[in-house]
Length: 101
Image (tube, rainbow, N blue to C red; front, side, top):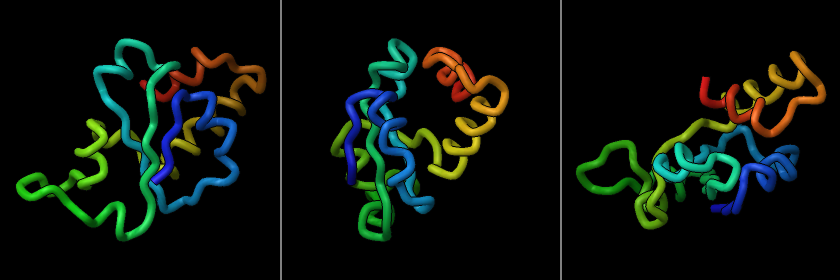
């Protein structure tokens, strides 16, 4: 499990993240202030397959950190790459818009 305090921190380490990971966020925090939302990045069987009883798709570590599924890394990365292709000088708000779209 890796924790990122902000979206900028995620961007700074994207090249080091694995394609097999998944991002989780607190959805209320994302709606209120996406740029300042804390991200949890879970990878591997231990993190993603230890599921909360009665909630078939919620990993235990996500529940313990009060976060829910946001995007798989592959999807997240594709969105960011497409936004950069549209405008290489994209602002943080433009990336947030693309992620929300």
